Image (tube, rainbow, N blue to C red):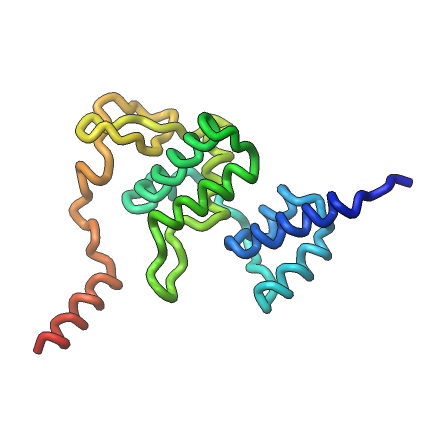
Amino acid sequence: MSKKSVVTEAQEIQLAIELIRLGARLQLLETEVSLSRERLLKLYKELRGMSPPKGMLPFSTDWFLTWQPNIHSSLFINIHKFLVEHAGATGIEAVMKAYKLYLEQMPPAPGEEPLLSLTRAWTLVRFFQSKMLSVAACSCCQGKFVVNCLDLNDGYHCGLCHMPSRAGKTKKSKDAAAAALLLAA
């Protein structure tokens, strides 16, 4: 019979609480925390007041390469790389610290969810570790952006220097513009 440390278990519970508060999905919790699934479910329900969302985690690199998500993903991964290289952060702690710094720079609008969720940020780090994604410098601004490792990235132009023609033309922005016109009238 193995002896469980009460201190270790308390640290695992504290880690799970912090991850849940940041928006972690159950699959992320199961991978990073050594508590049982049942305890994680109870903890999630107690903190969020509802069951965790069901469904698969993101498994494609494509989302990170589209215009707006690429900008957010690039900001996050550059923060993460800095913390790992210069602050000695590792593992899930590095992901959490980088995500908190990302949220400070890109706070979501009131009542909105952040564009880059903690689970997507964690998945992004895993894609970098498996060498599916990397960063490339934009030939215009020299910023480092997330790119597919298999693409030819010489002369790369980021989404900020070379915005797509439909950038910012979402239903949400049309509704905001219509509301502004109504207020002006």
